[in-house]
Length: 66
Image (cartoon, rainbow, N blue to C red; front, top):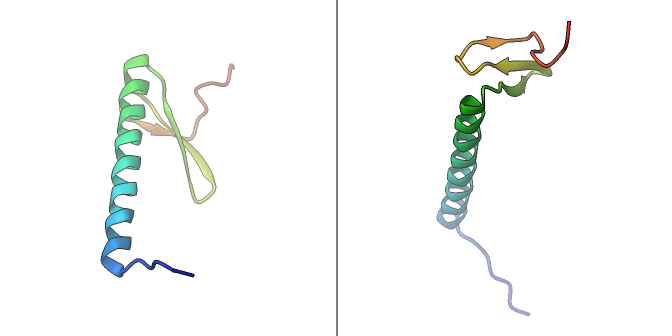
């Protein structure tokens, strides 16, 4: 049985590539949402926040009808 192992440098390089792909995807979604006038939704420490197309951040749900 042949077992291949990764060294620390290989693990770092793979992790860097995964992070790069994720960041590119996030930036594409942010741009698309901004162009469509939609907020980004994210959470921090269990609280939901909305980043509006103009860059302001609020906890008020913009999707909820009053």
